[in-house]
Image (cartoon, rainbow, N blue to C red; front, top):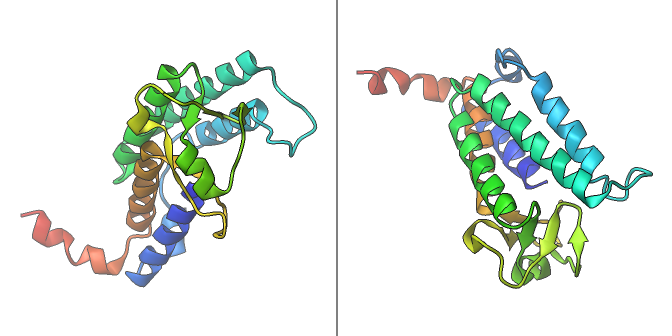
Length: 186
C-alpha cells in the first residue's frame, strides 16, 4: 500500500512540473497484462480476509514467488522507461529478503508498532521474526497508523516507490523537465 503514496506524489509532481494525464496514458507499456496477472496471483495467495477463501501456506508462497517472477518479466519488457530500473532493483531487494527467510517477508517489532500492527504468526505475506536473515532488507519501517494506508515496508519497497514516482513523472512528460533535456544531452 505504500506504493499508492509514491504514485500520488508522482502524479502531483508531474502535474506541478507541467505534465499531463494524457501523456501518462499514452505511454507504450509493453505486456501490461503481466502486472494484472501478478496482482491476481498475490490476491489469490493472500486474500487478507477480504475474500471468502484462504490459501494453504505452501501454495500461497508459491503463488507469491511466481508473482515476483512475473513482475521481473514486466520490468524487463519495459526497461527503457526511466524509473523502471529502480522498480526492478526494489523487487530484487524484496525477493532477496523473502527467499532468505523461507518465502515470507519478516517485519521488525519496531515497524509493526509504528504501523499499529500486532501479530505473532504469519499475517498475509509477512511474519514476525526475532532474528531475520538479511535484516536490512526486511519490513523495517512503519507508516504510522494515524496516516492513511498504515503498514510496514522495506528498503525494497522504498526503492520501488521512488522508481514508480520517477516513472510517473517521466511518463507525464512535464514541460519543466523537457527544457532540461537538451542541456543533459550534450
